[in-house]
Image (cartoon, rainbow, N blue to C red; front, side, top):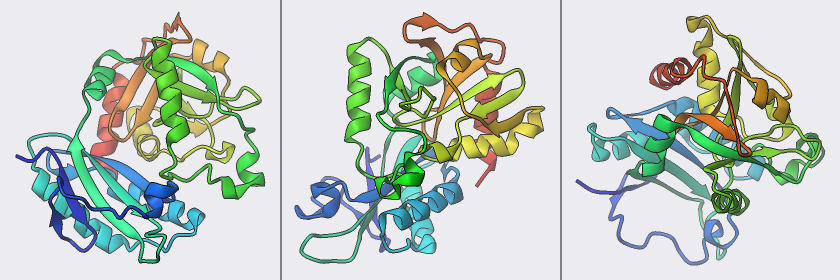
Length: 284
């Protein structure tokens, strides 16, 4: 069984060990492109339509041609079929501007095993540090060219933040705006519980709309929760009845430590994680 499955948008399964990109691809040279990451579980990619919708929005923001969703759906089905149904996988959809010398956009899909850290985060939760993101909550409205709400390939800052957190002995990061508002994680959406109300910062603050968070909010009422968007501060995390970093592959990672201080919100531990599982299993 292959450790990686590589499929191009023309439906061809490629040798994952062979070169694919040209050296002058804009995705390599400048991070000029967009991507999505989906969970593959039990032989099915999860929340496909939410991810394709977000990729289309990201492509529009970046000035890329509109992705053909039917082509991507077929390629997803092929990649999942070759991956198999007996293991989880992380499926990346990558869409770049193409070559500097001139070409059509570059598009491919790659399935890889879920990282070991993901299982640990799901089971044990994570310790988190808050870091300054360096912009105001109104920057997205003032400067749309910053692409703050798009999922672009330019992830160097996010990866640097995670390395910094690791150097401090933490597992993950929650970014704060220059006003001190909670934004998001480098690869996740922040969701807190206040009683049986689930809250997350509004996308208008320049954060990436979370697909798993959206699916979670869709099914919340089935389990007697309400859900809404609200401006949050670090103090809201400290007094919450639970804090989670929600993402497509890790699903719901409970935050048990914030800036070195234990969080006490354990009343909903397990319940929110089950709700996220339900969401990714039922929402397309």
